[in-house]
Image 1 (cartoon, rainbow, N blue to C red):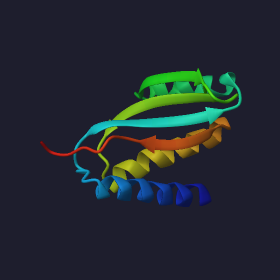
Image 2 (spheres, rainbow, N blue to C red):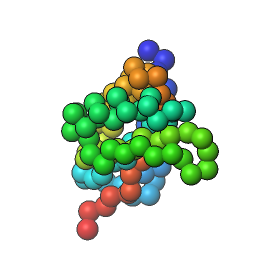
Image 3 (cartoon, one colour):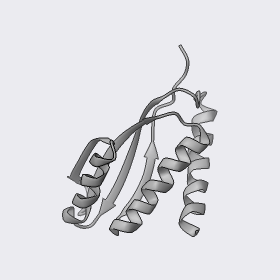
Image 4 (tube, one colour):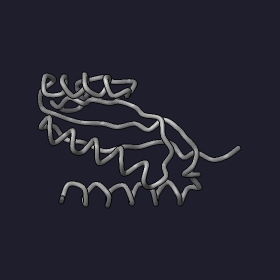
Length: 113
């Protein structure tokens, strides 16, 4: 599927950027995910399902500089390739199901102290 291939390519870019900054892919940390839609109501059913699936920090807000709405949520995971791809492909497929756009994921660099 094209959606999966695109998502994996974006994940590889993000993971490479994290690695270049010294990220330890095995450390669990908060990962932020975001979706966008033109209408608040388009994001509500997705938000409900994300809560049922155990995602936290689920919120929908109007973007301060545009007319779009942003749904944000968090998960706890490492940045090992297979873990990231499973989550991001799931999010991309959910976005397609709910006819919204998955903007992607991000996190802070994590290093062993």
